[in-house]
Amino acid sequence: MDLVAERAKSLGLDYEICEGGSPLWIDPDASCISDMCTIAEGKPETVCYGTDGGEFSELKHRVVCGPGDIAQAHTADEWLEIDQLEKGIYLYEKALRCWCGSI
Image 1 (tube, rainbow, N blue to C red):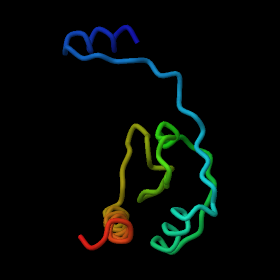
Image 2 (tube, rainbow, N blue to C red):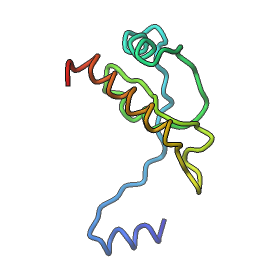
Image 3 (cartoon, one colour):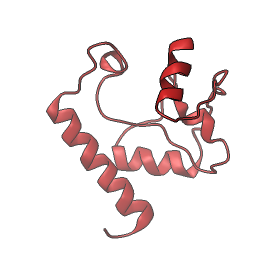
Image 4 (cartoon, rainbow, N blue to C red):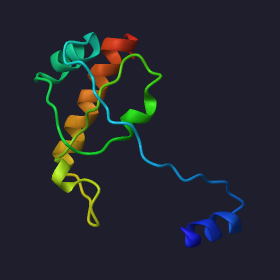
């Protein structure tokens, strides 16, 4: 953390140490989950890994989703297959059209 503090100071940045986020629980019967399951053509699933979604507790509707395999995420050699990226783009486009209207 001393190195982080030095680097932040040298760049003129402020930073704050966070103790960690709250766990994220979303009721699987929530309308946003039902909508996302329809969009993604899947079912809600409870998983055990970290997300910053817990930091957004002031938001009424939250969904955690994304392309790829969690085993490939947040590693030293993090990567995403092109077809998974394309599926993610398609999923996000469908979600935007559903919730925001025609884009």
